[in-house]
Image 1 (cartoon, rainbow, N blue to C red):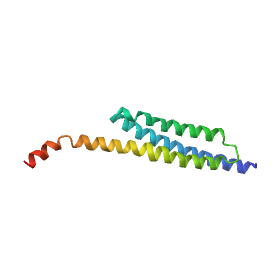
Image 2: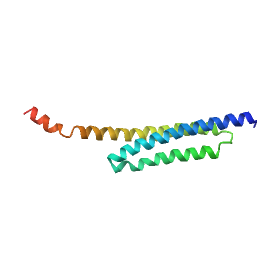
Image 3: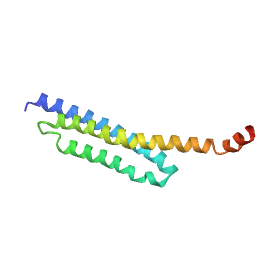
Image 4: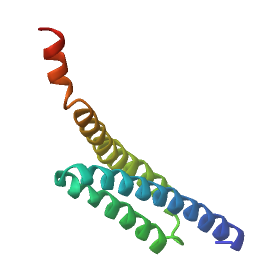
Length: 115
């Protein structure tokens, strides 16, 4: 492989690692917020560990031939699992908990209004 190709490949792999790192930070922050509401969301931290494992795989294989395509595949896979399932589930749980806490006293007011 020529030096220019190797530099380009390592640059693209670095960009893919940065994208996965941003995904890990988002996944961690969403899980941390949901874990404050309920301990049932603590296993969702494993999505952050999965993202870190993907980054390690990309760094280890950065000089291989098809690493760029593997990186794109891992980004899409992480988006589907951690973004689609993990972050979305945690975000909806936080939203639900906030709505429940905001409407705790509303039931008494509704009963009083429609008496």
